[in-house]
Image (tube, rainbow, N blue to C red):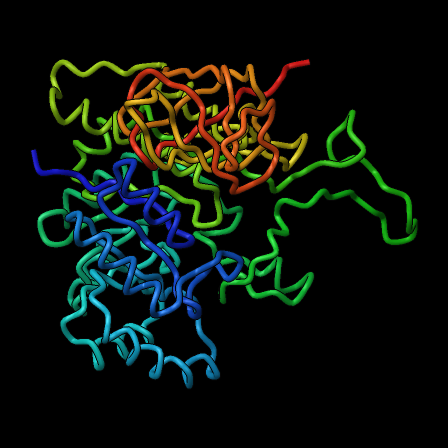
Length: 410
């Protein structure tokens, strides 16, 4: 079986390293300009160089997003940016606009190009059109069913790679082509500055009765009518791999490293378990339980089984569900003392029961019997973010592993 790629988001260098540490085969990230996540930290040219070298030293890949829908003034600045990119050893550029595609082909003829989901590829002829222009991969639109994915893969899978989203936030508009943000607050979603207007709370107001708000759904005084649930295809991994899709993509360049670690680790396990023994593979419900421990909205299978109905939205709230807090990052382990060096992210107390998120590991627990602060003193609590502390643990934990704590249900 040809190895399928697990592709993870990287909003900054720390997230890039976290994604690769937990098992991603490749990451996609944005530069300072011309991507679709202006709110992410994004990468300078120097950071892109460092990130690429880090990934390549581990046999992994880095793809850069260049997928905004540009206006004329963007096109004036783009050539200089592409000249800067030529100095880097990137593995591919993700592009949606034909003009950007043409410019990159002229200036970087050897660069591998992936066609973004923003290009709305929903049929096999469109995929072959881009192949004839020189594209190496098509990122299929989210608005496809599993049956449609399989049909496209059957037509073009031997000629170019196909990539699909398997997890993360869904867009209310057609593969991100939204005008709401621009209309309401002048922030162009297609140029990387979406205000997420679909997540706002809406009411119905009759023209001649200003100030009188009517419930859009009975029993509520307002509703999040465009608030999509999050995509989760953990159960469908075997079908997707069998269809001939070569890259499985996680959404979330603006999400935390806790999100990245949990999601990448879980999908890595599912993919590896299936590929090692396709005939004997059995879905483990614990995988879905793991995905519920990271920050998320209610999950949906999106369009995989056909167009979602009202169950595709969450009407009560646009807030994330958070049942665990991210507590710290493991920096080192001292076997002689049986202690872990931890960089604190949230306040840790003596007596806390923590879970360990380590590559390929599940269900590991750690009880904080004592805390040694950065001054070498035993203390009851570690309240300062980024503070380095030592806590006891009898087994080695890899540097880069994370610690989390379940939130109180009271």
